[in-house]
Image (tube, rainbow, N blue to C red; front, top):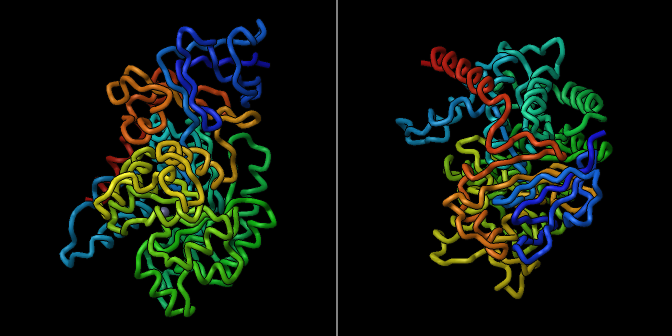
Length: 475
Ligand SMILES: [Zn+2]
């Protein structure tokens, strides 16, 4: 068994508190046990001779970032759907590209694309991903002889990179209310019975596998009718696994839901007991005050994806309403338009500044009537770390007993040069360039060292081959 390890950075944030080791101070570090779990903070003098000391002078160590909402295969058409369609409805140009990429990937391609995407996440300080995975069938729309084959490929890709994954196996049963099946969605469709059976098999297969968990994800109220949504929610509750769904990303979705059920999506699922602390709503942009109050009362998380939402023109998430009501917010890179969770965190605030022509909108320390009084930097950092972990059914704030999932940044990087413990959270959120990320650990295992991943060259080369074939096939 490996010895316990004391990571000794110059600065660290653990359990929401920032510490700085000045020369006059004791050398305070993060003590990690042999299994990769945090024992607590300890000084160099206080640990026994069996403890391995990893000197991280010149680094700040922070809790690992959570990417609570990802579709890895969408990395394949980055920058290839940014133009304007003749009719002006640019969401549809994006969608057609998405269907093309979804139809293209073989199981091996999916593995290669997922590996490169996960490597990019690791290099941005991400230690856990919630992969909202809806590719299940072959390109003709038939089930593979192993119906979870594509889920296995994505999980294997995360394992090979070293990233913690919660595979949110996604149910997708129809194109929409009174709509014919869409040929671009043929790899997504399963019957509800097939879906639940496959989800159960997948959850059983990884029940005892380290760093891999499984969650349930009815795609949206558009793709999953209410009765099936209730069945999936019941299954997730019985298995105590997370439940994620897209909701109210665009106003058109609210109108379709009202036409089918006479209620908006969040009203509908609230009425049917689908909101809970284990539920995460992705996007939740176009909600009424009443709907936000329902989300708050059920302690449900909202996963906001600002870098995707701005890319797709979805709208501005009213984060100040969520913050006032104490709704936990997490972040996701979603479409992979870019992979930088801290950029998502800063955009949550910046969108509101542009909208209101004011500053410090999410700074709860200035708001006497809000659920929390947390300053803006630490609030957004918690959203990017522990809230995302909790949304995936995990714990990740570097508290004792939690997995040692962390990243370090170079204090000499120009983007944060001169930072101190007091400004570390705010500088990380508002200024840190992801190129400053040096070490990344998942459950105490370093998967990035001095900015390098051991399989980086191979992962890049294999991704490049898939990308070229995709271009040849789609041009
Ligand atoms: Zn999504």
